[in-house]
Image (cartoon, rainbow, N blue to C red; front, top):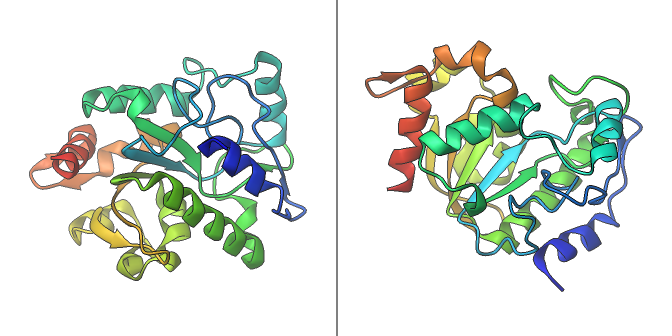
Length: 232
């Protein structure tokens, strides 16, 4: 069984709260997992990808219905994809080096796809998603995880003793001043080690990027330098 087939098979065991709807790779083209395979070239292997890109959740019900009609995520119209791919280019990361996935499984009920996921209201479901995330990490064994946004950082903080600094993030300014935007060689509860970089979410990049600081860099340059230093 391939890596992605393995993941989709394991999804069958997930029970969703009323605020979320399960999806299992219905998109045949390029898409974040679990909407699609999560690989830029639509390959079924993730173990050869050195980088994991971790978003919050896939989207909302209304937007997903539109995406289903075209069979893939629109990397030009989608602000998440557009800003993310531009950033990866500046950070000298090839698109096919990454596994694009989400912390929280499924899509949101309704028509609001931004902000903190309603799934966070259900502690039991979040724990199931955390277990599934650990399974993804076990399959891929990523050297680096690019964490897209504060909500995602708070999601993974409880499953690594090294990520306690991310359990409650007041704002990016406080985070950057404390030097906690990068956590090197964090050990997850399953024993897998990865280096994590906390980035602004691509969909809100233009609104938030000016707040970032790293060494003598600020804004976009700060986040690029964070990643470049991590990958050296």
